[in-house]
Length: 211
Image 1 (cartoon, rainbow, N blue to C red):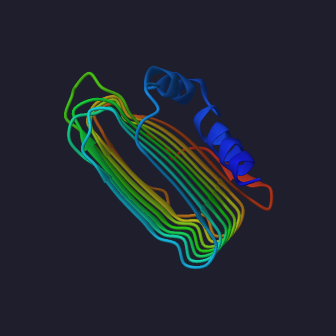
Image 2 (tube, helix red, strand yellow):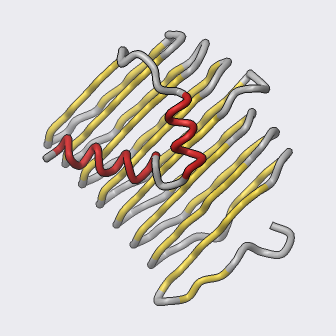
Image 3 (cartoon, one colour):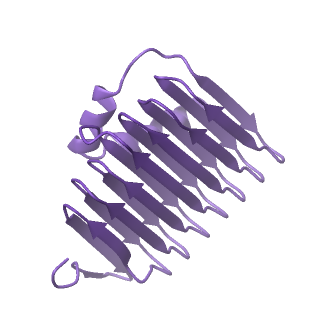
């Protein structure tokens, strides 16, 4: 069941759009890295990797959750994190010279995602896909070079999202469905492309003028 949830959540996160599917395919490689599964009570996972083809997969099923991830040095870096229920909370940082890719799914309760991606190579892709379904929510994303792609989704409850993309391509897809929503804190320097959807009780609106 937990593997089914992992596959379902990551497939939804990574294959929801063609751009992110392409990124995931481009970055597929040897399945070597760190694989952590934690079930119930008060798990916590802290992972640090310094490897030219780093891969980390974290699954936390229930109770207090928490996951700290740091992948620095030469890329590519790939991180896949799923938290299924209860207090949640992720702090993820990816630094490198080459492609970086993060997929995060939080299913219910406390939520909170702090994600930072820093890319040195002007030719590499940086991608983040974050899905939060239900309860506390909150996403803060910072991408600093190069291509910068982000797909952020919050479904239900308190919401709140902040996205910063600095220099290079910059593509943002922002989806919020139901309840608290947020005040559209978005910064893009360099390329600027965004698609924003907010809906609450049937209401929806487009990006602000000049967005």
